[in-house]
Amino acid sequence: MSKVDNPNPQIHEIKQTISETQRKKRDLLEQNEEIEDEIDQLEIFDLIRHIDDPEHPLTLEQLNVLQPENIKVNIDHKLITVLFTPTIPHCSLAQIIGLMIKVKLIRSLPRDYKVDVYITPGTHVQELSVNKQINDKERVMAAIENPSILRVVNKGVSNSDRLDNCC
Image (tube, rainbow, N blue to C red; front, side, top):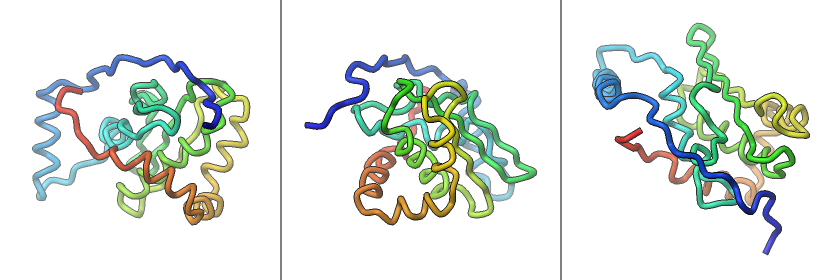
């Protein structure tokens, strides 16, 4: 068995990001084809919150790797920026986690949106290198053409479409 970087990660309580009333209102707006629904921070969070961690049977939300306040949406420039926080400063899977976030959003959003994914500043020893790899178009394409990397990414995002009514 391979060595696990963080054998005992801290599991965080899932916070309710919007009220049930707000969620119902948002769901009704999304279902109405006549109203243009702008993409917002919480919608992006809902898309990526259930991505599975590559080391543990937990989601990135449960590990506090993702938080809604670390997502920025610029509608005018059609730019989504996500910061994620690895559970430990020397996480060897930070590139894979960033790639999973990026791939999930690219697959889920309209093609004219640009997605940037970065490590939260100061939270990883190879922050600059990882950020460069995650946001280099050619490196991302090469990574997802690699069958073993693609298998890990697809496994991580495979359950991410579930919606929780509670949170």
